[in-house]
Length: 365
Image (cartoon, rainbow, N blue to C red; front, side):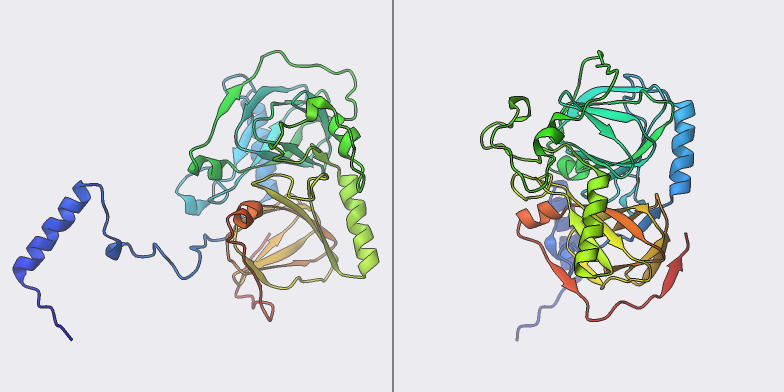
């Protein structure tokens, strides 16, 4: 065994080495602690309360107008572990958007993909590549990458919805593009059923011929051709699944009706229903998630901390955190995750713990 002896001169030489390394824009791997952790560097869970979100969105509605200088009245979820960045996780953007009575948000498009999950209000529609899509509570609306979209509220009540985007991921890939559309907005006396629903809104049936205006280029089938998933259909499917299985919980994934794949190549959407008193098994999954409580009350235990929630609350579960849910009364939770990306790069991993985790602390609603 060889023993190396260091002298004072060695220390001086080492300091000089580190200075020269730094000036050359290099970093020595042997000093980079935590670069390769034994498991993901999980952020802390975090919850945003519906009461606060609604109150601040309404105040913004009174004080901040929609014009070309702003385009959208959106409050982004800024996770406190991300140093002030307006991101819910390292890969997912989450936000609440407020559109007041009579307001119109002009068209734009961007490379990040987006979904809208409607929380409150009625009568709004969004135009996705010229296709008018009505929005009602519990509906999920897609605005895929590079799709033109504008929002209209011809009614007399405001609407609040959850926005979910892959913006942090696309930003880290240095692939964000944005383009404003025309200032001319399309007006409708009555909003028709969207073409995407007419063609692709029937479960189990695939059209042999499609509207050319909805077609993607050959080899570019990237997202679902169905731009909205109606709550009435999701609700019915969950009830039917519970009745058929006799289970105390059910979950459905929003998929491309043509392929069965996820609705977006970078975003996964699911709806989870829990019956009163049921607590799910504790699992850990690679990839982060944003849980939006559509209705009901209950709690999620994340790494031993119990987070109580109610309708409109939003909870982030970071990658590889132990998670389970329990309903106080019948509850529906929408989940947005980065699952498709994790699977595409071969890093998918899920573990179900042999026992439900113990609760060490509680964050009350």
